[in-house]
Image (tube, rainbow, N blue to C red; front, top):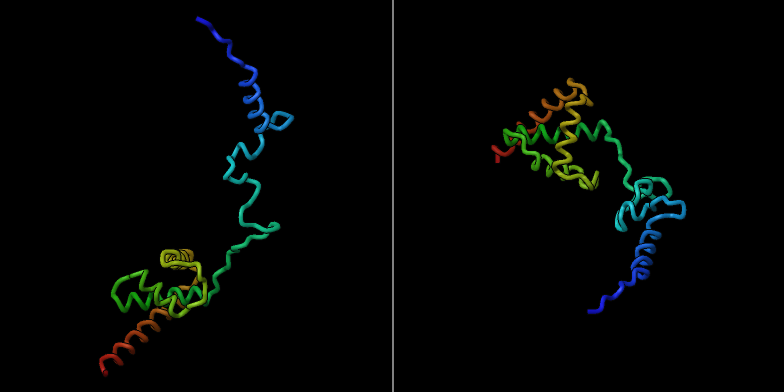
Amino acid sequence: MVIRKQDNTQLGRKKEQRSSDSTEENGNRTEETQHGPSQSPPNIRVGHESGTKLNKRIQWSQEEMKEVLWCYMYIKEKTLGENYKEAYKLWRERNPVSRMNIDAKALFNQKNYILKAKRIPAIEIDEMKKMSDLKYGMTQKIMQME
């Protein structure tokens, strides 16, 4: 029986080469190996060009917030319940090119934020409720006449 001596020099070189790829000369690990090849390091922002955001948040105006609340109030009166998908459809019909990236759930969250944070005074909300009641009442009368 012959015992072969394993050639450790070749194995050692591969191991050394792999470790030198993941460490710099001073012994620190490089960012690529810490985060993996498909992930970007935390200090490099994906989707930014020269430090500016591509999808910058646009603040909601008072008119936009009133429009959201009005749509929810109108649907609430019309359906005798709060159906956020129907309110979104109404809002989208009235605002076809405004805030294209928002969906029904996000609009519902925005409505809840407006009410919780009291972004619109209670007096204006009461006026909007009256207006939505009047408008819904007028459409009901017109439909009964036809």
